[in-house]
Amino acid sequence: MIVDSAVYEGGRRTDSPVEGRPPGSFVWIGLHDPTPDEFESIQREFDLHPLAVEDATEAHQRPKLESFGDMLFLVLKTARYVDPEEVVTIGELLVFCGPDYLITVLHGEPGSLANARQALEADPKRMRYGPTAALHAVLDTVVDDYQPAIDGLQNDVDEVEAELFSPERTNVGERVYKLQRETLQFRRAVAPLVDPLDRLSRGQIDVDEGVREYFRDVYDHVIRAREMLDGIRDLLAGTLQANLAQVSVRQNDDVRKISAWVAIAAVPTAIAGIYGMNFRNMPELRWHLGYPAALLLMLTICGYLYYRFKRSGWL
Image (cartoon, rainbow, N blue to C red; front, side, top):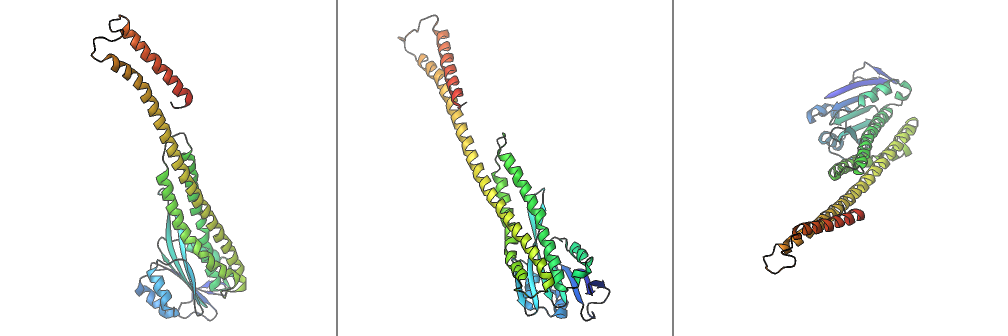
């Protein structure tokens, strides 16, 4: 469906119809999950390339920038962090940018494109640059939305580190693995966008000179987002290794404690086993103090062993 549609002339929004828009103006149309039938009329009106239209209706494309004559076709990934579930929800945004139009097709959860439109409408000077200015506003908004999602991941990583090195015996392996998966998925949405923005900022794609410096700013933000995700990914990998090492250390501690208690328990078991044998001729068998002496011997040896194991750190 069409979320918003407007014609802009001289940097300002007008009430002109899309079909009969004045010369020198451009139209900005936003759609959300359109069907092929709904998109057909827009394709005819703006003579959009069939391959780009196919990608826009089917979605599930990787971030890319393609040129079809005087039309640019850009694929972006939107990101939103869901804190209770610790997941990054990835959406898809496809942009058609022509000489007198900008068409955005959003799949998935609605993003903050309305804010981008409002911010650009409040700046008529930039809006005069036409569709490329609107293209920058869309790119800037999508990339800026990456930062809150990255902050959410970073906050969870900090929690995992605190939990990993806490006195409590917890295993954070499953949580770390899930965060690694979300980080990898997020990076796949961000990293391929670096090359298209580099081409836009370097002038390899024909855009207005006044807008090119704005693309350079977005390019810097994408580079920073990718580097932060790389850092989170490496940190999670190190956290997972530390967790495995800690689990191994705890298992060794448990084995040592079990071995120490088994050694202590073996002493009274051995003494009781010897004096429990049914033989007539045994040392001190008829001694009146034999029973308490045996118990005292057991306690003495067990106490000594406990002292030694405790001092060596096994208990």
